[in-house]
Amino acid sequence: MKMIILEKPYVSDFLIETIKKNNYSVFDNETARQYFKKEKLSSKTELDNADLIYSNSENAIGSIDNKSIKNLITLSKDKALFREKLKPIFPDYFFKKLTLDELKKFDKSKLKFPLVLKPNIGFLSFGVYPIYALNDWDSVLENLDKDIKKFENIFPKNVVNASEFLIEQMITGEEFAIDAYFDENSKATILNIFQHPFFDKNDVSDRIYYTNKKIIKQYLAKFEELLNKIGDLCNYKNFPFHLELRVDNDKIIPIELNPLRFCGWCITDIAYFAYGINVYEYFFNNKKPDWNTILKNTPDDYFYFTIGEVPKMQEEIKEINYKKFLDNIKTPLCIRKIDFKKNPVFAIVFAKTKSTDEMKNLLKLNTKEFVIA
Image 1: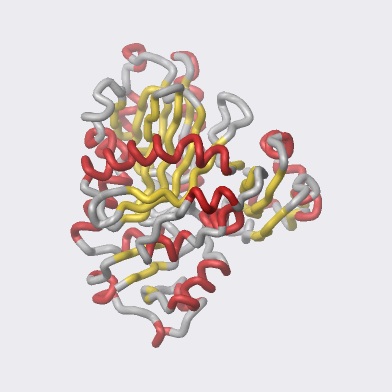
Image 2 (image 1 turned 60 degrees about the horizontal axis):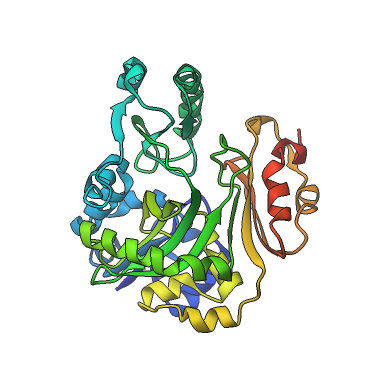
């Protein structure tokens, strides 16, 4: 059985249309009942016996009791455990797991900088801090305390957990992300590759990701080779995932692997706008993109998504000036407005552009510009 778990924070119309078109089974929960009648939904028993499971959100992973899938979820979400598993590929990579109390008492003089601090179980960029020198340590911990109060009220603990943290060496190079799945033989099928630009060295936001035919051509084979090694080491099978990694010349190092989903907030739908790929159908049908044919029919444009983050003054916001925000985007392909009172995001926009200038401008924006308080 093919099963989808729908969960907060966001379900796209595109995903709902795909479910209806293919008559996919949907697990019965509160979110699913907003879109489907209860009698059309599947039971917990059916979920536990499903062969293929996909969810739009990591909020759903607490619903999984299938032991083999649950073990793969744990391996993926626990960043320290994932690093341990990949030691045969990356034997010299430094990382250390600490509780919050241990982190505050830790003798940081023994550390080699630069480093990155992040929740051992995390999502988006909550609690992620680059630390370039010993002098930055105390101020980072102060900001971390503020972050903890914020994200504990937004995500469940199996998605973001503030009790354990990872300090690890800073991975240099360009950042990329991959939407893909492992098949029953632990071999990877890549459905999209994004590049993740930043405004400066301290930026850890998820504001912009983009893809184009040049990126696919340059990295498809290299990333596939690494993913197949990971699949074999970790015994991933019939498993959709979103992987973040960095590329520095010939070095390719994974940052984290997010389980049972592709790019969050249904942003994975950009594969349809860019390449005509419905990632949900490709996963459930064990279908591989014919990239040679797809890229022949793809223009040279950059296809990107941008996330409008809600400023920290969330409780004071009355409205968002969406028109002013969209004035920065010349060719929007899809505009999704998000409830900014309940979420850390007020909009997700898919767009295309001929150069990177538009995206560079978006990276500079202060989202307070679009707030009506």
